[in-house]
Length: 493
Image (cartoon, rainbow, N blue to C red):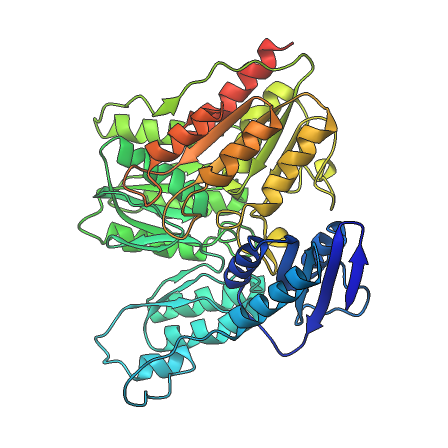
């Protein structure tokens, strides 16, 4: 469908039988959007969220789109630029890796077939990263082959998660996930993970960004990790009952390299927390908790307590101060990529500020709804599953968060902006390159929780310096960043 707009011409089309992952489509959109004469572009699967985004750009395809179709929406200054942009999309989608030399063997199509082709003493861990409706069969094949499995996929029904974890327990292996975004096994980083030193602390984490925060702080303190076993965000819910958490604790207890264990999670179900505490008390390795709650809202404090118990001096956590002032009547606007970091910020802020609205609220009546904006104190978790359907995670693609920042600045409501930036493998290779200009353009006092290490590909100091140059105050601790934002709001009253 071609049309004429107030600023040029547009092309909007839907293609069936074409699929590409969200990271690849994001890169296509970026590359085509950088072409001369192109003013707007969205190449994405036609999920409801992406259709809403296209409509907001004035490039909606109308009725009849379905999530299994590919949406190509482009606006350009003239016909020549538009034609070249469409051709560039076609070329990018058609591009395939080519190999030279003799014919290659037909690749194995399932995890089970791949494991069958390996010796029985081969790799002990399988990784599943396919759409959620297909993940269960692949994970079940790994368990049947006697392998532990990391299920990176989200969208797996909770009853399937329970079945997988019960089967894994019977087989004497571990299921990490579903929706396990972070793990480190024997020094090998999997998913979103940071470059941290090896050491004596094992983490069992029902939280990806929580595990990243804790492991990075331990690295700063000179204390490394033996393993980080992600168990999926639902493992400590009533429905799952901590199945993988209890199994992971037992594995770390049997690991000679692990001298202490820290359990990291969002607020767990009380009955499950009690069951996990009972299991932990029966182990020989000491287990401490960094499970967030209204009484224990601070991951940094949990790390500091572990360090003191281990006889290690608590360091001064890295930061980049800034001379910030909030306008009278300012409110907190939290824009987060990490769900646990968003929860931690709300748990710290709510006793000071009162009600904080969110798409992942502390209380149901504080739900933001679908527009993700409201007057007053707001914290948005852009990494929530509902916002990543058909899109790359905000740790990779900052588009939605940058748009939200621009809307806050344009609203005229005085605010202090609190954001997290998570570094490491799999994340945006240079998040400050887009965030720093956006913060500068917003003109609002901004506080950044920068989660990472100097050894990460992005480099903690390089990112911190760039963000500080844009006027932001930067902290390695999310808890410290949140409290600094609260101090700014308090000083403005």
